[in-house]
Length: 319
Length: 315
Image 1 (cartoon, one colour):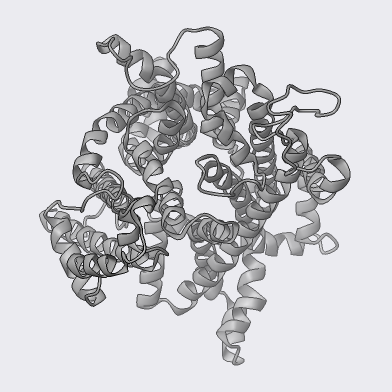
Image 2: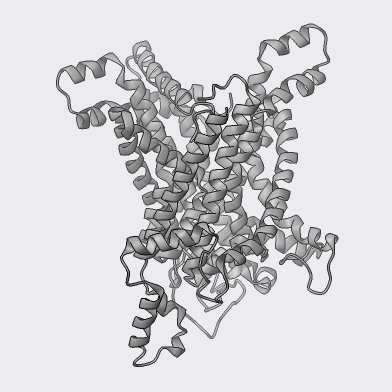
């Protein structure tokens, strides 16, 4: 097991480095000169060509690509991702201060999606081909078809503007505050993000439970006179939920994608909002930093998914 | 990625073998009825899927005949009539630049369908070639290709699209290519599964002995065997591509104004004033995206059930 864990970690580090090279080369290939980007257009005067050349030399942009990559890589592994073109702040700091809100949004959404998916998937599996089952299927299809940002706009229209129940944007009221305030701001984005992930999770719970319900031990439990509800909740459901941890891990990166978009709709001060702003401003260091953060998150989730799968199911051969 | 997770190969290979088996036995059972004819019959019996298909046909007609349906220009700016409420002249009102929203909605169908269909076609083409190469050649090439595919699948495609759009700049061709780049792995896995299943069958051994090249086997044996499932995956990819275009354009990273797309029409709805008092600006494009994607998914599900009844989502 230890050898397996070490090997998986090494493989993931190699993949991460490859992704880093890819992102680095992509930014190199991008149109536009980073030095020009850093200078405000109004400061760009006649004769500043010499200044730009000097800056290029100073920043090492005239060195061979490999040398530049080496320098960038050494900086990156020590946590220095450069400074934002827009406000000159260190990228890692910018990303870190926005990590908290994104994690809060995603974990709440995950909890909501599980609260929907487990009961709904269970009922759909037990009462197959009834109206509940069809409703669950309709929900799964609906949430993958209706774009979440549109749901967000509709929710703002109904709950913020028509009913006035919930705030429409941000993470807290300026001046006001406290936990309840943040919670009120959190409800809509988290609920919509949770709903979007609940679709695939419900399908998964349903399918997994149906498989489990046809297992021999379920028949044994029924034969011994266990109450039907108990057989489902105590026997079959428990086993069917074991691999759920793997599915959740695989779903987290998809959830991040949803968060990126919803943060924009609800002005939630997370990493996604930062990334979209950076992309619109062509702030390459921030875009690269964001890409690397996401890559790290995806790889860690994949690793955890593999490990969790091996840990909870002794039948899985660790090689 | 996953040495451990429920092997991604086996179900696919098994499913692919099932398809091949179904088609063979079906052909024996009724020689007059081709597998295609039977699939078409099953599809026609599925009311929801047929409804989705009819709706898509209407949208397609709307897109093709946009200049006939929309009397106004989708890009003509009229600063004297900005953000007007719906009226007899402007059926769905006007936007912030005084452009007719109904005309934009109709013309936007062109962009959405164009991006959706071409991105899906490109993805399916790329995926078929990669999957067949991986399956036919095997060895390290197979490992590298499939690891790459798994990697791509585990990355959230919207994030890749945002990063690509941010670095390469937003444009429709880049949009189509980027969406295809994030979508091909699904087809690749599928075609590889079919390839592995077909590769060991007698007729392919016979073809190989007769000196068939790999390209020949791909065209004459593998693609036909996988065609049904490729069509299903392709259809569902269209839904994904339409959504991706909408999301990116909504964020301002996809189709650029003045050209209209359903996504960038919703871009206006980032202000509360617009959301509150001008629902004609955001409700129609939002509903258009949702209805179109839902219809594509209905058709996709219907096709899946029709191509292989045993793989039906409702087991």
